[in-house]
Length: 183
Image: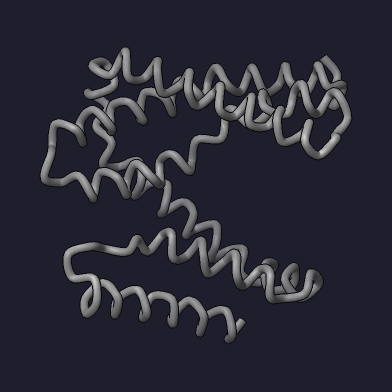
């Protein structure tokens, strides 16, 4: 636990130093630094020890994730959803096609069973948390162009709402077609 807290503190300290002393015009995103630290840490620690640490850290993690989601969703202006029609459609279509065909290509390249090749992409559709993270980063970067920030926020907010309704149904159907759950 001490190693984890020291690692988090070092990650924040290094990020602050780089942001204030080295990259004065460009900001490193603390959320991405946290994700990077977590990936490195999880791969350095043995599986049994990682599960033990995760069990101890779970209450803090739950509160942290809730705070992160609220922080990401709070600046999204829901009034912009109505004006984002065409961009939202294009974003959802491109994201869906990328997930479906990317998963299909990857599964085919790895010679996965036929149901995985056909339906894995459908099960990936509802996961839009990462797009909210990158929306926050993009909006922070585009502060000098508020009209683009408005389009981006409206598009991603609308897509997140639509994806979390429609894509969940598509994912369920993908699991059913792959015979992973009963219809």
